[in-house]
Structures are given as structure tokens and as C-alpha cells.
Image (cartoon, rainbow, N blue to C red; front, side):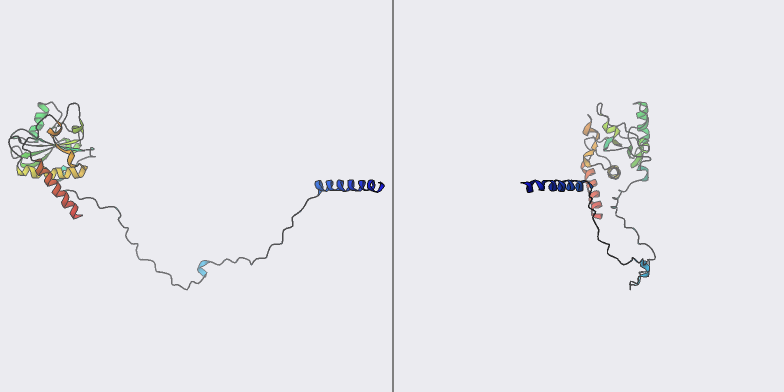
Length: 241
């Protein structure tokens, strides 16, 4: 028994030493010494022989490629038909007859001012029949250079065909007979140009009577001839591209 009790002080002393060591002793990691490397030597690139002959600089740069698609051809037209200012967003072409045997832009302008009390001629274009102007002559109304809305096709309270419709009047009464060949030729050229310029499709090339309570431009007006001409011209454009 006396031998066992003699071991207790020695164990307590060992525990105390261990506790002191846990609070005061630090472990320091020792890193291995760095491996020596060869010193870096800078040498300019131009001093390094490549064994190749440098290419000669071109005398001039090649021209830039034009990647834009070609503009569609503009139909044949008179310079006076071109708008004189920024275009309105036209989306209709409305065809009329004067329902009279004779006339011209000036006489219709006087009638619209004095008889209807409008500010000026209501149409944008007038195509003569040889009475007040030449047969097939295209007269440009005062509204067109200003790109002003028309006064030719009001339907009730709907101003769509005035505000966004180009009014073309052919002199004559086409309830009694068709327009002259010269008038139809000029109308075809004018409509071709306007439809191409403003992307107006066939469904928006109409007569006044298509939307209004009127027979205008007359029961004898040959819409079939007009559209046949337009289709023929468009096919010619497509085959030329």
C-alpha cells in the first residue's frame, strides 16, 4: 500500500507539467529552404532572329466591302412628284373622277375654295383629259409639296383616307366611258411611283366609292388595267434584280 500511495505525487506532478505545457508551449513550423532558380534575363523580341523575311506593307488598304443590300429601283417618275418636305405616313392611294367633261387643277381649286369653302384644292394630283390641261398631264396640287393632308375622301366622321390617303383625280365622267389611254398611262406611272415610295400594297389602292357612298371614280373606270400594269412593272423589277 505504501508503494501505491508513493506513486500518486509523481503522477500529479506529471499532469501539472502537461497542463503548463498546453498553455505556454508553441509549435513553430519550419519551411524548407527555397530552391535556387536561374536569374531572368530580358531580351527584346526584335533581337531574336526568326529566320523569316518580314512582309512588305501594302501600298494602300483594300476598299471596304459594301454589305448593305441594294436599294430597290425607283419607278420612272417626274421630279415634280417628289415630296418637297418630310413625307407624311401615307398608306392609301385614293382614285377619283371629276364627274365633269372638262376641268383642271386650277378650276377645281377655285370650286373647292369658293363652292365648298375649303382652304385649297382638296386633291394632291389631277390628271387632265385635254380640256383645261393636256391629255394625260399630271398636275401637282398645292397640298403635295407641303405634304398636307387631303380633302377628298371623308367617310362620315372618319378622316383616315384624308389624313393618310393620297388623292388623285382624273378629269372626266367615267360613268359614261373610260379614261383616255394617255390618262391611264400617266395614272399607272404615278401610282407605280407612289406605291413603291410609300410601300402601299394593292389592297390600299382604292377608288373613292370603295369606302364612300359614291360611284366615284365611275362604273367604267378600268381598275383591272391599272393593276395589270402595276403587276407587270413589279415583275420586271424582280427579274432585273
